[in-house]
Amino acid sequence: MRIDPGVPGPVIVWLRNDLRLADNPALKAAAGTGRPVIPLYILDETSGVRPMGAASLWWLDKSLRALSESFKSIGSKLILRRGPAQEVLKDVIVHAGAAGVAWNRLYEPAAIARDAEIKTALKADGVVVESCIAGLLNEPWTVQNGSRQPYKVFTPYWRAARAHLTHVEVEAAPKRLEAPKHWPHSDALDGWGLHPRKPDWSKGFSIWTPGEAGALARLDDFLSGPVDGYGEGRDVPGLEATSRLSPHLHFGEIGPRQVWTAARNAAEAGDAPHGEIEKFLSEVGWREFNHSILFHWPELPKKNFRPEFDAFPWSKNPRGFEAWTEGRTGYPLVDAGMRELWATGFMHNRVRMITASFLIKHLLVDWREGEAWFWDTLVDADLANNVGNWQWVAGSGADASPYFRIFNPIGQGEKFDPKGTYVKQWIPELANLPADVIHQPWAAPERLSAGARAVYGKPVVDHPRARAAALEAYRQLRGEP
Ligand code: FAD
Image (cartoon, rainbow, N blue to C red; front, side, top):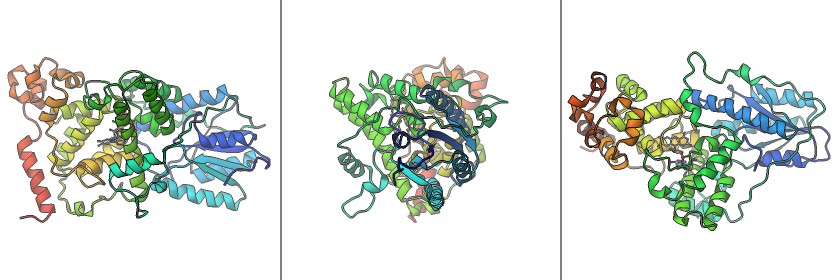
């Protein structure tokens, strides 16, 4: 439903994972009424939507600060409130005499349920709600196969999804917003305590610039350099060959339409070969695919997409899990990834696959435990992408990697980090090892310091034995003799 410009009273824009001014259809709809606009962010930890992890809260803090400044610069003000979304909205509506609310849709099951309930309640109070698409290129229900069913396999999904993308348009940010006569009360962001203290573990997060300007700069930097060579470079963790847009996309500091349009323009201008741009866009396509899968299979965060995995004989293995989280498994590439994650809130995609595979298949720990750890520590933690990828690695997901594909952490290191550049960056105690043993330091114990020997003299599991045990567990699952 569209908000009627003739109805008096301000319009509230309820901002969620769309923390930007440009290409923000809900903001545009509100501004387009000509009525005063009240931008509102609600920190709602009560509604069944999975609460953000610590790294995400760090990001949110900085992103909201940047957004507040952006609203100030166009004569407006971001109102911050904490509490159950429905109660807060009703309170702001009553105090402001608001005529309508606009928001951009979310696609996670609990958010859909909450928003539907709020919409019904507001309608009953005579408040018009307008909802828009901002976070995806296509609504999940619009991309269907010939039998009107959602796709379960990526390649045909992306082919069909692309066919919908003939006219992708990007809206400019509003230059000015009409302010209400009286602003509603806003919390002070400092009072929310989102930035970690005692201890402040976020020193290494200074590589990031959360906010819309930071997102646009990342996209620009990527398209004017690393995208050329992306197809191969994206697998090399020692290179900065990917866009690092994932947290910006998750928080909606930039929208997928903006990424799509800028990438296509770069290809047309000849700034980068078409093939490289297409590869990059297909990764954005995986983001779309994962959101579609979660939308259609809302139990995915808890349940295996392939129910045969429900009988998998997971191991409890608290010692192994702890060594994994702390980057002390004795496998340098796994440990480097886990340490990068802890230090920066990010991990390179190939290393995410290797570390996840190690937890699931070398340590036989349930993918849900790893998913929860990533959820707490990633700045780009995203329900659809995190769950979708963990199930992909486990072999239990849609269009997943087969279970018997067990990443060899030594072989992967030798192939994708042959000089140990990435490993040495994150594990300084191995900095002096030559390349031929950097991925199996136990082969050169005499070159290890006493401290390094404790972890790298004897890894937590032996690769060939762990591999055999994982394949045995899989045979059991399939009921094979
Ligand atoms: P680029 O290579 O520059 O790709 C561009 C964009 O495409 C990314 O920003 C991201 O939005 C999307 N994208 C890229 N790869 C994938 C993928 N495999 N699946 C879905 N979307 C993708 N990504 C998240 O955004 N949040 C998560 O919580 C998350 N958890 C993951 C957990 C595991 C176990 C694995 C294996 C992958 C996970 N990913 C997750 C996907 C991927 O690792 C990151 O999106 C990627 O590393 C982000 O780096 P980038 O922005 O430089 O990617």
